[in-house]
Amino acid sequence: MSNGSFQLPAPINEPIYSYAPGTQARETLIATYTDLYNQVKDIPQFIGGQEVRTNDLRDCRPPHDHQHIIGHYHYGKAEHAQAAVDAALAAHASWSSMPWNERAAIFLRAADLVAGPYRATINAATMLAQSKTAFQAEIDAACEFADFLRFNAHFMEKIYAEQPISAPGIWNRMEYRALEGFVVAITPFNFTAIAGNLPASAALMGNVVVWKPADSQVYSAWVVMEIFRKAGLPDGVINLVYMDGPEFGDIVFNHPDFAGLHFTGSTAVFKHLWKEIGTNIHRYKAYPRIVGETGGKDFVVAHPSANAQEVVTGLVRGAFEFQGQKCSAASRAYIPQSLWPEVEAGIKRDLASFQTGSPGDLKNFITAVIDERAFDKIAGFIEDAKSKSDAQIIAGGGYDKSKGYFIEPTVILTSNPKFRTMCEEIFGPVLTIYVYPDAEWSATLALVNETSEYALTGAVFATDRTAVDEATKALAFAAGNFYVNDKPTGAVVGQQPFGGARGSGTNDKAGSVLNLLRWVSPRTIKETLVPPTDYRYPFMG
Image 1 (cartoon, rainbow, N blue to C red):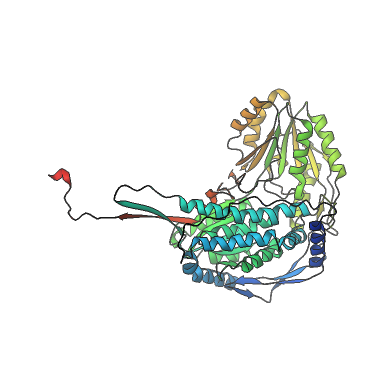
Image 2: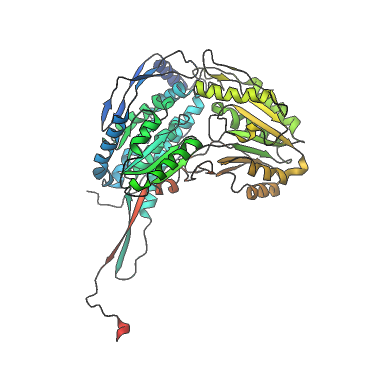
């Protein structure tokens, strides 16, 4: 029984550890990384509270050391997807009716586990399996994940508190029901926080979830699942499976109780799933919620009034942190002729100072891309640029996959603003730059707006406030997250709710009330305190 109007602890963003030399956090992280590197983990699926093992074992290998094995995960088949659906539906009644404060307590405990005793483990797992540097793992796996869990609980409290007005003699109230059925969470490799948040946000609102992470993120996904279990999540609420996407889809998207999709991944896959859901719409008990954050071709546009060194730092960090494997990474830039000599020199200087290698060596700024398929795709873009007359590589351009999937941070200068690498998503450490005449600022803004199908993030650098205002208006629909004098990456939960439109997704803003509202089905309840006893109205005399 829950009798009381409960108030959750006010959320604050998790402080980011520096991991500077001499700090205890650094020593703990290195020791944990080394320990995990020297183990071979057995990673089962998790269905209905049970660890599920199969005869089909797949390897977990660090992208920066792909001959080394750190784990084996148990690959599933259609029967496991079906079992996960069944387990979720079996848990629906008890979980959806659990008092909201009790659900909140589970995820608040999970947040403190992430920030405390599991911090080094989840960061080290992300460094090993996704080849993130210590800092990139810290802001992702530890801090952003904890932020999602704490702020989402806060947002849930705000949603439930939003109630309608009541006329005299009437009590109106709004009940925020869980969706009728199960939610599917499909998560990407590049952010452990996203992988944890997509199932957790839906579950927090009383939903049950079937979760399929990317194969290349299974290692850290299992750590997330361990945290949820340790926090007291009931059996069947979140079910974790690893399997082939189409085989998985055949089960979940044909089921009459499919209630929603929470997705982060490629635009092409999301469009395919939307089409599949539409084809099956007649099967479902209710219209499913479809929430997706997909691709990006994120821009930086500099005005002649911009500070050149600020532009350089924004480009270098925005394009090359985590090897450009962020949907928000700076991928195309528009630089005025007057600033280009200084910007070019600054970029080349910074790239020459980069150290590359294993994330286990904390001096390295660049590590490996996620797998061989990504490596080959990115290398293909680089080779194509080398062969074209309207483009030249002014920095980087090399790559080597003999030990790890290493690609040099690469800068392409093009005379063609519609060059292939100005338009297509690469998802790797490749930045393409177009230099425009200073007098063509307004025309360049129009060019930025029309060049890409995506509209996720973008940035403008300028000290002239009129230019900032013009860019903000001209690029109103070009980015769901717009940055002024900053790189187009690094959205903080509770500060910059994240999501884009056009080909970049449904813009339901992870890290805000808006996202959580998609995972409830409101019911209005009207109660008349003293009901009438005569059908006649006064106008009838």
